[in-house]
Image: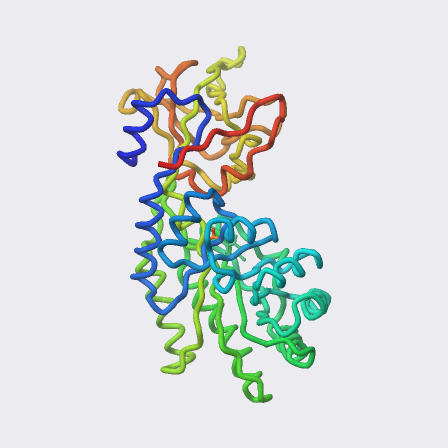
Length: 376
Ligand SMILES: *Cc1c(COP(=O)(O)O)cnc(C)c1O
């Protein structure tokens, strides 16, 4: 576990559950990515963790930001980001939010439908727009396929329309799905993008930007390919399709930047088998699905766990949250084993919980207070 966070947890009497994030680790991750893919401008996906200390650190490092709402844009501006460094990357935006963004100087907007394009043309005239393509998400633990994106044919049609509407038809985006462990999905997606570039060039429209989205994985319970494997595939695909004429490349990492910088400290509330002698023990924690662990839905993201009894004999467990909701079960099928000595009152840690946790916390379900957060 991150030693700075260990020291913090050992010396501060924090209440549980809480999230502790090492902001220096966020910086390291950002720098590592800049080094691995120097051709790409990094637009941090704010939704992964919008905490002010993270945004401020990234502003200081010169990062760009991918915001999903006017509210996220406001957070970036408050953190000191320049409006020229913010992209409004959600394909589903309220007209009023687009207007607010336009007034604040945001000039880059995503779309995947004619209806959204019309909204952007009305509320953010002459802005840069990019069309999101649907791409293969196989290999992603947290897919984003169905809800977003369009076909290459439709994208071509829409980008031509964008130009007719007086917008700046800037480029194309995709997202290979979050926690994507197969680097080849990027190559396949870039091939699709290249088709759009080529077909539009033949019709006299030169696109200038490729947004390769997020998706880079981090290590939870299982190892994942390292960043170099992704950057190699991405760079080779770009070179293959665009040669020396590389368009402007941007990427929108969220999980990769903040995920492994955070740890949750949680208390074991109860260990029991409720009379079902042959069943695994149930371990109830003071954090569950409704205090931030939304990504345990479908047991998609499987966090690694540290306990004070690590190294001793373990047995299978089912992990659940503390609320009165029957769906508040974290892991039942994912084959978790924890020490037999584990008991109520023990504090345990859920590792790599810096992304997609803090903001998923409900406000007061069952009266439980939101997760405490510490940025160190
Ligand atoms: C969520 C999201 C991201 C970040 O994805 P990660 O898998 O966390 O890197 C990037 N771009 C868009 C449009 C998103 O919705």
